Length: 276
Image 1 (cartoon, rainbow, N blue to C red):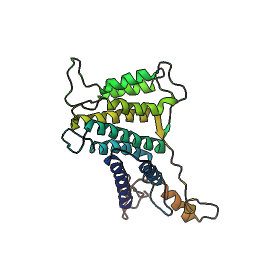
Image 2 (cartoon, rainbow, N blue to C red):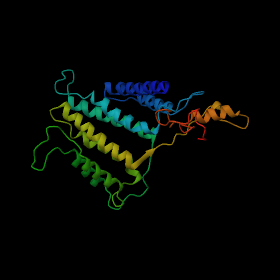
Image 3 (cartoon, rainbow, N blue to C red):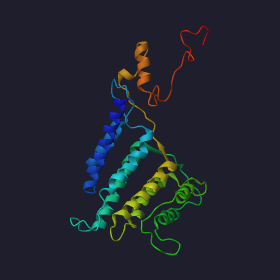
Image 4 (cartoon, helix red, strand yellow):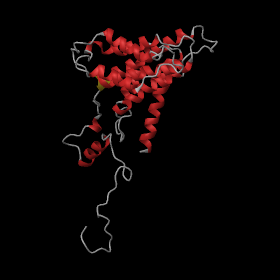
């Protein structure tokens, strides 16, 4: 278990390092994009002779995307940065880079769950209007929220209802457009004075929208592992090796004394004369 934890920690660190390399200059190059995709694919594989599950399983997908936003916040330019000529322009570039990273994650680890035809009441204009309303920071009396855009649970539920309702569900053809539009419209709400705290709040709001789109319109890609010969038992494989292979592939293995406890004798002691 400790070895599995260490491997996962190393994999997490490798992903975070790739994110930081891309966000440093707020531009993701084709080589950086290819390296990110290659790393994700390698983390979905299992090495020959390994007794550990893949480092990247479906339960890690939310962490992968959320980490892109979390680390992206570290590279937001503010008005106090004298090395940046136009902080707002740099932040727009950062949003485009995060969008590219999320696109790589989605195309590598997720599959669409939308149907070809959407609801009869769906339109791009209605989706844009809903996204903009989530980014608005003015309250009912027209006063600006000092903390920047914050999406409430009720607003997130309204977005989910829009994306899943039979009448307004989006068609498959707009799936990529939905996510890219969340970023494009979000960039229009970057703070005019480049207040970092407000822009961090904006990135969190974009993350909420992207998370809702992914959870309602996409599904994890099944792990179709290309096993090496040692992981492919055949008629000539001995029983012990076949059982070990099944054990190696069990990604949801329970830990003894933590997840379960065996008591095969029903607490019977050697001095007891009765059957358990």
